[in-house]
Amino acid sequence: MSDLISVQGVVISSTPVGEYDRRIVLLTKERGKIPVFAKGARRLNSPFMAASNPFVFGTFTLYEGRTSYNLNQVSILYQFSELAQLQPGVYYGYYFLELADYFGHEGTDERETMNLLYLTVKALLKPQIDDRLIRCIYELRLMCVQGMMPDLLNCSVSGKAPEEGDGVWFSWEAHGICLEEYRGQLPDAARISFGTLTTLRYIAWSPMEKLYTFAVGGDVLPQLEMVCHRYTARNTDRKFKSLQILEMMKG
Image (cartoon, rainbow, N blue to C red; front, side, top):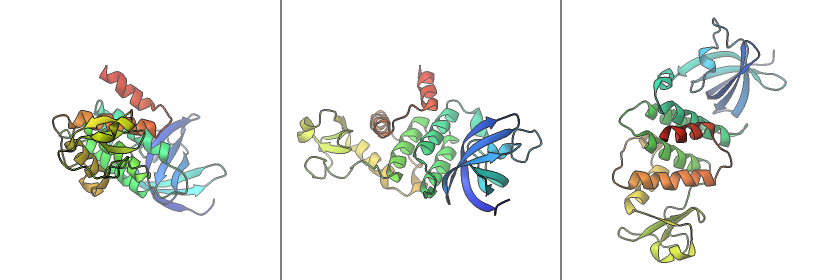
């Protein structure tokens, strides 16, 4: 057996292999996104059974094999098993894992994405926070973590900063906002309220632990959904299975 290594991570996917084993994918602080083989994880008496499920955060002790890491020991920190009882919350959770999987790579620093995932899954367990708002927050903040933050400070055409009372529009093509007098140059631009702009800025720049501490009213949530969902779709090229289920549940 090769030398053991210890990583902090979260299980972002889990697939059965053979009769008793599982192949899991971990998003880790130390080594980025890595495949891990969990031998015997599907046996009823296996110490890896609970630890090889999605949403499990913990410390994983591994050794390197020829094609993947192998699970040797695990200490579970957070399991989030109660999420399985929430509808449609669990599917939002799976969508968040799929997005993290999409952007994750081996050998990269995934500390911020891991922290965001933890806080987001935790927020799904709070009934006072709308799942639709949680999705918007996660999508936009993940884009920021991945270096794809839209320009929310200045007009993408003129470079001028909008002030309260100005007409503000969002352009997905220009990856940011524009003032009303310049929207004719951006055919895809859609109007948003100044309150929506303020909320987008808060999501992008607030301390991560403050992300899920607010609510929105009026037209802000529908506008956030318009901006964040389309912006995420523009910056990804995959159809996410859990997102398709969520759309079906909406009817």
